[in-house]
Length: 128
Image (cartoon, rainbow, N blue to C red; front, side):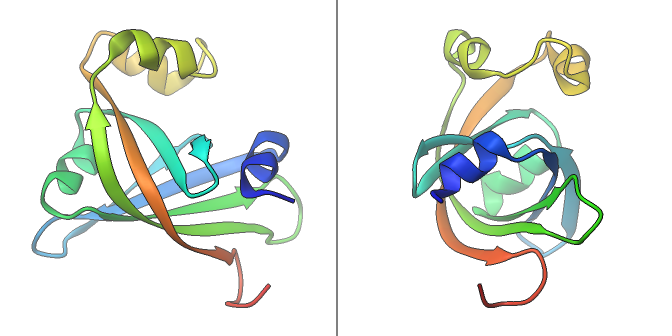
């Protein structure tokens, strides 16, 4: 199954991790990525810590845990390649208006941040 299909069909929760230029790590709950193609994804980000960290360190990791009893999911290792503030595009691709993050940040600046997928691993272990 393609990675884009996996994320389209699989229910679960995600967490993104970034760090600043000094290596201080931050994490935040994030929804599923928006797939541009099989090697490029994007996240809608508010002007908060995760986005701020990416200004000085382009690397991030995204952990996705499926809504199952077992520990199943994916880990994506990412590198930021670009970002934009196109409000119309962001509103077009966002998934749910009732999303808590959308409600909390709808009046703030939001960015569509694009990432290259460098590596994909299962949630547990390092082999498929």
